[in-house]
Amino acid sequence: MYKLFATIFFSLGFSSALCAAEGGGVSPSPYVLTEVFGLPLTNSIVTTWVISLLLIVCIRLLVGSPKLIPGKWQAVLESLIEGLKGLLEPIVGKKAFAMTFPLLIGLFVFILIHNWSGLLPGVGVFGFYDATGHLKYWMRPANADFNATLGMALVAMLAWLIISLRVAGPKFFVWELFGNKADKKETPALIYVMLAPIFMMVGVIEIISICFRPVSLSFRLFGNVFGGENLLTSMTGMVPYLVPIPFYFYEVLVGVIQALIFTLLVAIYIGLMTNHDEEAH
Image (cartoon, rainbow, N blue to C red):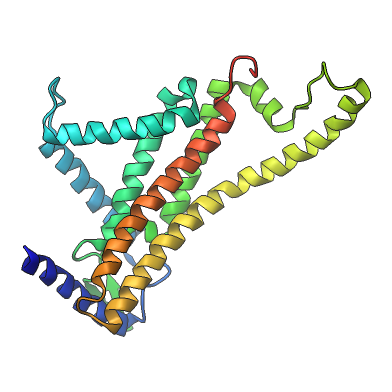
């Protein structure tokens, strides 16, 4: 088993070193392989389709139809779901949990698998030479493409808006952004009135902050995954054997952390609007 494990990493290191020598590292943008119905088909899209299809097929083959007494792989998936449920439900609140959980677990699993996709043999290694003599990879980790991370962030924020309006209601949504948070019963009337424009300005600042959320979500994930790809390419380019192996395990950890951070931030954004008691509503 050790020999097989070492052989895989040695071959990856040697191939990555060649790629680094040819192309000078990982390209910041994906390569367009061809066009489908006039739309560009990039290597990151190909990786997204292949990895997602493999994930669906593996789950269907390993788990099959859910059973009352779960098998080994069904128990693993149920443990993952229960763990995420216990983590996310207190954040988003019970009212929003049923609507929010499919989105959050989908984001977590999708991001995690595609963060790890760059560690698979063949991803970011094999390709073809274009007319200029540059090597273009057939496959590239989806989250090393800023278009993919920005798309997920925009979908997450659109879901945030829909869930917040449905659970909290438009009235509470507007009040949470611009409303006077001072206690009217305990605050003198003059001070309460003077606080109103201040809270309006705070609401404007909050709107600006919300507009930047997709940017921060997408750049954080893209930067870490793309940086990890460059780290592996650089290390294998300098020392192809043995030395890069710890960095592969490091990227496994980074993949989990970044998937969890992205999911938790989306949950927190939703919870800020939906996780309130009845008195607040």
